Length: 57
Image (cartoon, rainbow, N blue to C red; front, side):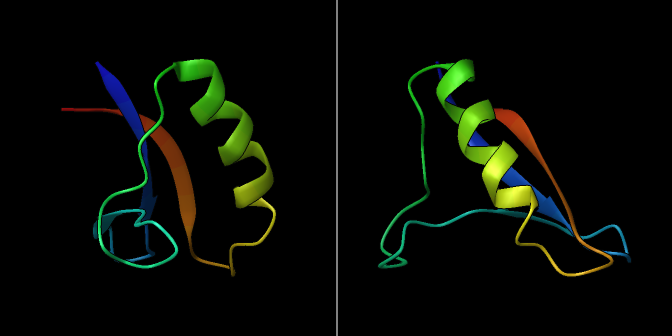
């Protein structure tokens, strides 16, 4: 199982975070790695956006 970062906007639309080159989804091998990344990533989000770690297959 892998994990990804899901971003949700104020309308409730969900998006899965892409790699920097936008060629594929950003995936993490462990929940801990994804959670560590998300902790820093959340600090960069604009108002009205939120993020969470989700299971990704």
